[in-house]
Length: 86
Image 1 (cartoon, rainbow, N blue to C red):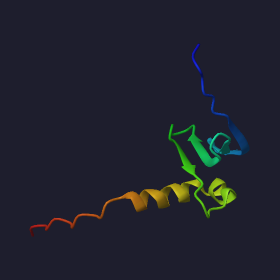
Image 2 (image 1 turned 180 degrees about the vertical axis):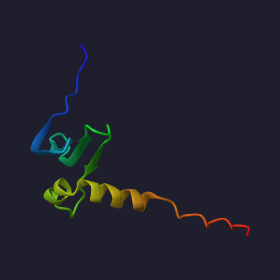
Image 3 (image 1 turned 90 degrees about the horizontal axis):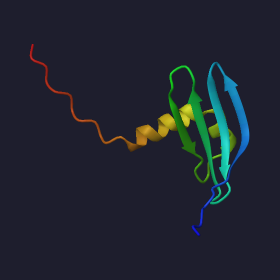
Image 4 (image 1 turned 60 degrees about the horizontal axis):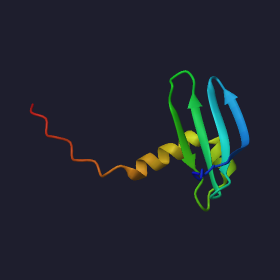
C-alpha cells in the first residue's frame, strides 16, 4: 500500500473584476497564506506569498504591487548602458 499526502488549501476570500480573479488562500498543512491571481484576458497567472509582518488583506487587495516589489528586489544590478557612437 502506498501512502498519499494530501495538501488541503482553503479559500479565505475571493474577488473578480474585469476578468481578473484574485483568491486569498491558506495551506493548512504548513500555515502558508498566499494570494493567487489569474487574468482570463491575458492568461497571466501568479501567486504571492504573504510574508511575516505583512497583512494578508493588503496582499489580497494589492497583489500586483506586492508582486512587482518582489520582482524588483530579485533583479541583479543593472549593467551600465553601452556608449552610443555619435
